[in-house]
Image (cartoon, rainbow, N blue to C red; front, side, top):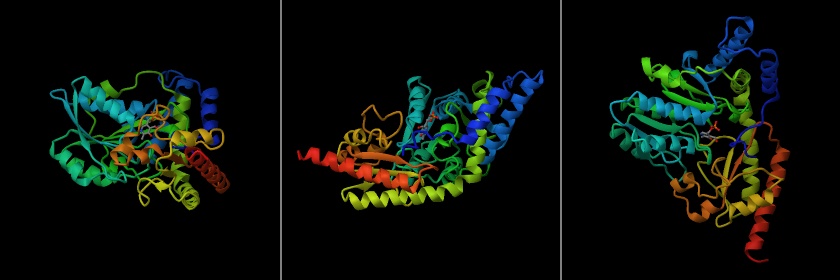
Length: 376
Ligand code: PLP
């Protein structure tokens, strides 16, 4: 129930990884012999599968270790192409920590400045705030495809139009969205798209940065983004297969996952009248359910669910740190609501039986914590 943090590897993907690891062990950069050539062929096939899923050409695809690296490379590349002055970046206040950190590094180095794009109580972008940032003549706008905490989906096609009209470039953090919502690099002119294999039933430690032709810069692009090292061929092959499966089966899976999510939500809302569903009910990822039990410490609920139901308090890298979520803060949620927040993320193998068991366990945990708070 925490598929936003990561997903289990699809056994079909694992077969591809194992086969590449054992049978195609050549170095994709050493093509003087057939071992290297076979490895390069796997990388090329994976590149085509990645490009296919997000409507890009293969020339734009670069393999990385995951979204964090892809995002850092994008911001670094945007800074490098603006050598004459600091990079003016606009970003939503609900971006993932990976984006916030990349921007912060640029600011600390004196190479970037930031303009914030505000969101409403459902984490939707406030259009007037986006327009205000665009009037500041920003160079780069960072908008995620979908939020990793409350699941809100962003109108990337429309945003890309506005951003380009203002003469800026767009970086889309597609980590939670790719394969689940429509994102098209060429048709929508996305300049940088970052995403990760381990959020789509692929192996960890591999992801992609897709760069549009428009964002390429003859000297700088290869210098900043070129990959001279030995490629992670098994990981890349597995990532390609995960993308192929997401393209072929993702839309069908989404319907089933949404039905399970709605069943879970209905059970919880019925049995726990105080519960509030956060984010946009009509415009969120099908597998996302973000709840608050106002005033109830979420760590106490999660501790009672340990070894029974895997849910989280928020973003993978923030949970455990016990710091309030910057996303919920940006949405203007009260401290009570922030304190009682629980993030649930279903997956393609979550069954109705899992949902019913999870609902029963969550209801029992919340009631137990409620009783102990009242000293009963
Ligand atoms: N962006 C978003 C929206 C995420 O959810 C995550 C991971 O949780 C990341 C970026 C970082 O991804 P990775 O783990 O591939 O570095």
